[in-house]
Length: 178
Image (cartoon, rainbow, N blue to C red; front, side, top):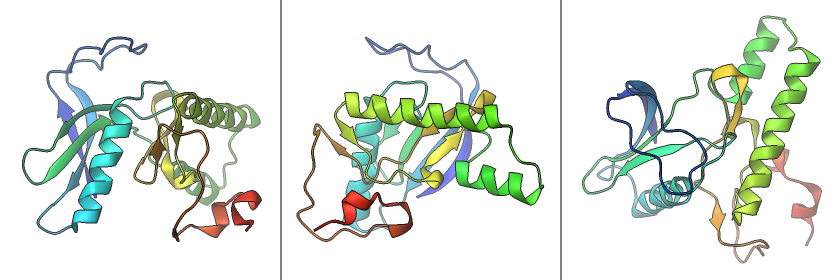
């Protein structure tokens, strides 16, 4: 779906068991839209699954979902805004400017990625689309996993039962075994 920048005037209170503080009043947020009139039912279902999985997650290295509007079209997910965009875009901007990030910065980003994926697995969520385009760089260069459209919840192991489109460039070798 399309993503727009918004302003969260009245942040929701922290949910029980939530370890992160609620966003500040008047915080910038990203608003992801899915226009039901233009999108197939399959796309709408994927969008709602992304919202359902994302809403229950709360970790420093996972993009936070503050709310979902699903009563009318367009469907909307209101989420944390990561001002530096995707990791892929950030890395490309660094390369274009011919400024290599410091080794400590790269190690911190790698650590954030590992911490986020570890948290997902502790929550029994398989992302199934880990790629630089699905990590967002937030305030203070904190890396956050986003886009749960391909995720599978409440599982530790997953066997592929049908054909699934995957970007081979990002696949681990064991995924490609018969």
